[in-house]
Length: 140
Image 1: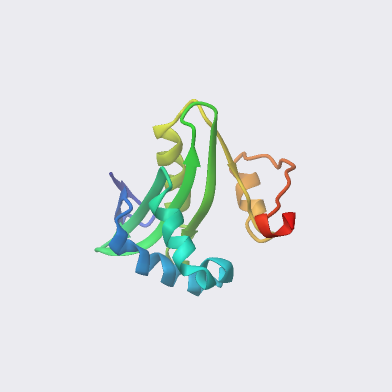
Image 2 (image 1 turned 60 degrees about the vertical axis):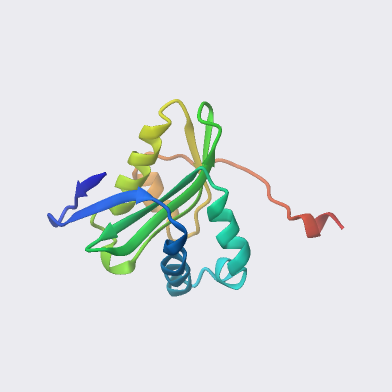
């Protein structure tokens, strides 16, 4: 799928391919998402097993991505949404969310955000919710 950005540039959304992972890993490192970077092999396996896995491309360069999971009827969980810094503010992230939600319009989107991005999502009409998290190692 191709979309036109606010600056009139055209970008493509397409399904993730294994050769995209090196670019995704670089984006994660640039953003200092250290858990994903330090656990590179686990992160790559997560991409291989996610039923929501799309990249945004401009001039053949991966400039962003969205990864998540869905049951296709009730819930869609967005695990990561990341846009390369120089492409932020042009509508790429919003378009990726709309594109993905359009594939599963019956679902509700759920995602975690950090303190710097929560206002962006609130501005887009998302509402906060309360949840819990625990790793397997914490069960010990």
